[in-house]
Length: 165
Image: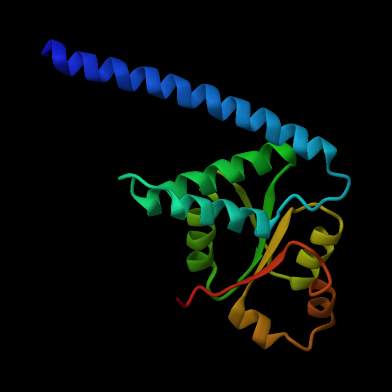
């Protein structure tokens, strides 16, 4: 290996070490934020959107989609530090597609519980056994008159996903 190549690798190693230190600082702050939250509203879509918009405005050659994906995982890690982050999903007909969407967004390391009963998802969401609940758009349309769905519409951290796109 040439000395020049080793110099570059050494520089990258130093940068990697700095990134790890910065991520540790960030996660400690996220934990403090979690400790100060009085309610269970750990997921803040508006705040996440604000972060993503800032990332999209950054200058440089780093690919934006990769930057966004990295930050999504950092946000998920922060949620995991703040709470026992678990996802519940009721998508009996498109379970695999929905899991792929959730894994892409949150990361494959997040606990995802499959529900075969919408009322059990509702109960677990209300009782904070899961942090966020997902319902496939087709299922939402199919059971829209269901009383459990009316309850879900009043609960924070409930999301409808469309795996058809």
